[in-house]
Length: 197
Length: 151
Image (cartoon, rainbow over all chains, first blue to last red; front, side, top):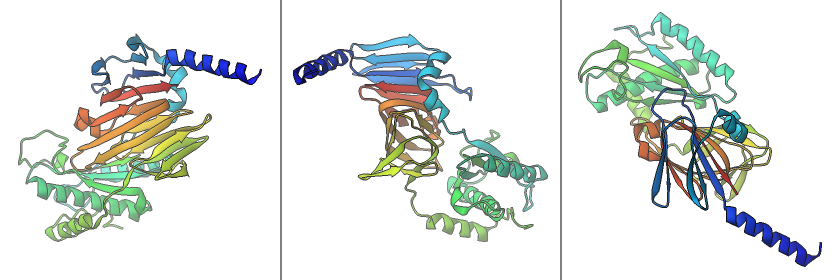
């Protein structure tokens, strides 16, 4: 092929591709957590809402086109991306014996499960989240919940977890496990969550 | 070790915990590579780093995968992003207050395939997380979706 022919072929290819334009595809997946799920697709001031599992939108030069995808199509196109998805965080909750400085027996056993989960993950990191009940103001509860998390973190580190693998968060009374009004003492809300990621 | 999980929450210890909290530096990390196969690079401030599992990510990092590459990351808010081969994904903006769960997360898929599980930022405020493509903005109300950009 001479140079002119090569250029012509390239030009033709570009024209054909140019007409098709880049194609972008979005597909909403069923979600494992059972929570409400939706994605909005906004393009040129127009919004399409994908709210059903496997609802898809295809965006080409001609505009947006809704389509119904399915598990097989998703697997074929996105198999590699989905295979690389990290494990979702594993969640553990620890409770303290009321009016004592120690975890309940059940919670001590849960700590063993935490270490088993850490061992099974290739690149584990741990987030320790302290919570309080609704007695007191945000400032005091944030500090208290943070401190509960620090106590648990110290315990995990003492059992061999590397310090740089674990961070603490105090979430105060923002996420009550048991819904109560404000100012209610509730032991089930005085807890520490451990996320192994 | 009997005091390992000591939960004495007296006033004195509270002061210590507050001091620890105040002494912690601001966090620059936004997430971490948990899974990497084949060719994966992270472009950061003009440098290209090997995208190995374990690498801690920063805002504005750009992840690139080769023809045999894929990469999976966990963000600080528990969002999970994973890209297939021949993909370019930018972590354009990530801000997260772990106490209140308020934040902002904007990612961009320039090319390739991306699977997303949204995290706490989108759960707290559905307008706070977006994924951009060359021609569209995806608003993440939750929770799992896939997106591709074919050139």
